[in-house]
Image 1: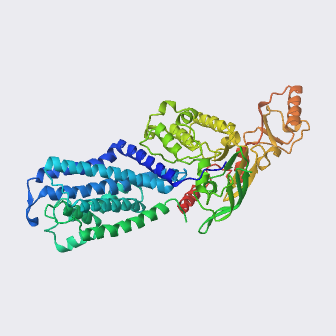
Image 2 (image 1 turned 120 degrees about the horizontal axis):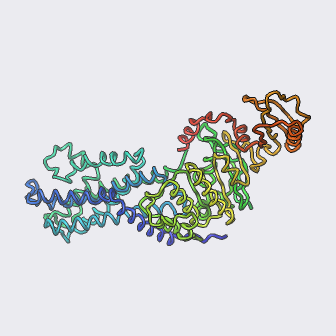
Image 3 (image 1 turned 180 degrees about the vertical axis):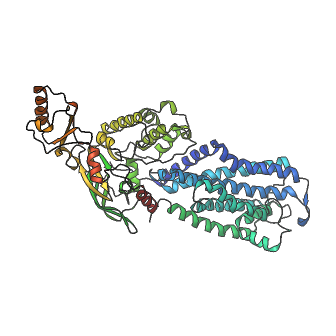
Length: 265
Length: 320
C-alpha cells in the first residue's frame, strides 16, 4: 500500500491536461465564449468600420485604427482573463465544484494553473485574431521594432487581470451578481482609459483617476507600442510600473481567495 | 488496523461546540452510519474525516493517516460523495470520469467500468448539465469511485430520490460492500441506516448518544413488543387469561394494546383463548419497536417536524 511519491513533473502533466479540459469546457459554453471572446471581436469590427477613415488630431493625425485596435485588444485581454475567470470561478464556487476539486488528489496549485493556462490560451487566440483582423481588415501597422514593448504589455496585462479576476471572486457574494460586479468594476474605466476614444480632451482630474487603474495602463502600453511614431523598443515605463503594481495587488488577492474559500474559522 | 479511528474529537466555532468528545472506530469493510437530526454535527464530523475541516481537539486517523496533514495521500484512497456538489457542467459524463480519473496516481477505474457500475451507459456523451437529478447522483457516485478507493464517504446519498431510485442506490452501495470497501454513511433516513449499516451511531447536539447494530441500538432488542387487537363489543380485557405483559391498556381508538417482552408466549395465550371462546380478534398485530421509534426517543424528536431547522442553518453559516 505504499504510495508512489507524487512528483512535480507528474503534477505539471496534470496541470497541462487540466488546460485541455478547461478549454474544451470553455468553447462548449456558447454564452460564455460569446461574452468573453466574441464580444470584443464584435466591438473591434463595429468601431473600426465606423471610424476607420478618421485620424486623431490630438495625436498628430494618427489613424484611428492604429489607436483603436490596440485599445480593443486591451479590452479583449480583460474579457478573456478578468471577465472570464471571475465569472466562471464564482459559478464553480457556488456550484460546489471547487469543493469537489479539493476532495481529489489534484493539488490545488495544479488546478489553478490549469485554469490560468486555459485563460492564457484563450487570450492568445484573441490576440492573434484581433491583430489579424486589424491588419487584414483595417490596415493597422504591426511593428517589428516595438515587439518587446508589445509583448511585455500583453504578458504583464494578462497576468495582472488574471490574478485580479481570481482575487475579486472573494467580493462576489453569489454567481448571479458576478456579471454586474465585473461590469461595474471595468466598464466605466474603459470609457476614461482610452479604449474607445482618446483621453486627450478629458479633464485632467478624470485622466488622473484613470491613470491609477490597470485598464488605462494596459491600453496605453499597447497603444504606445502600436504607434508608428514611437521610437525604440516601445516600452512605456509608467504603464509597466502601474501594471506591475496591480499585478502585486492581484497576486495578493488571488492568494487570499485561494486560501480562504474552503477554510473555516 | 481500523479504517477510521476517532477519539475525543471536538470542534468549536467560536462559542459554539459543534462536536463534543466524539469517539468511534470503523472497521475495514464495515458500513458505518452516522444518524442524527440536522445540526447534530454529522456533517462537521464527516468533513473533518474527509480533510475539509480542521478539528479543534482530539485524535483522528483515516486509513492510518491524519486527514489534517496527510490530505493528498488520503484523497488517493478515499472517495467522497458530498451533498449537492456540482461538476463541470459543460463536460460529458465520459469526459468527467476520464478527467477525474487522471488525478489518481496509484490506480483508477476506467470510465467504461464506472459507467457500467452506475448504469449510465446511455448518458456517456451527455453533458453533466443535461442529466436528471438521479443521473447526477449516480455520476457523483461514479466520480467518488474513480480512484478505486478503500473508503467511501456518502453524505446523505439518497436525499431527494424517489423510492425506486433509493432502492437502486442501496443496491449499488451493497455492491460496494461486496467489493470490500469501507463505507461511511450519513443519513437521516431510518430505513436507509437499517438496510445498509452494520453499525449506527446516533448524534445529537454534537455528541454520540447511542452506538450499535441497528437491531440492538438503544437497547432495541430488549424493548417490549407491542400486541394490538380489537375485542368485539361485550368482551372485556379482564376476561383474557394470564399473559406475561409489562403493560396492558387500550389506545384512543379502543384497541387493546399489550406490551410484552415475551411476545411468543403472550400471542399463543391470547390466540388460544380467542379460539376457545370463539372470539374474533379484529386487526390483530404484533410489532417490534422500529429503529425510528428508538431514534425519535433518543434524539428527543418524538414529534416529527419539531426539530429546529434554524439550528442547522446557523451551524452552516458559522461553518463558513
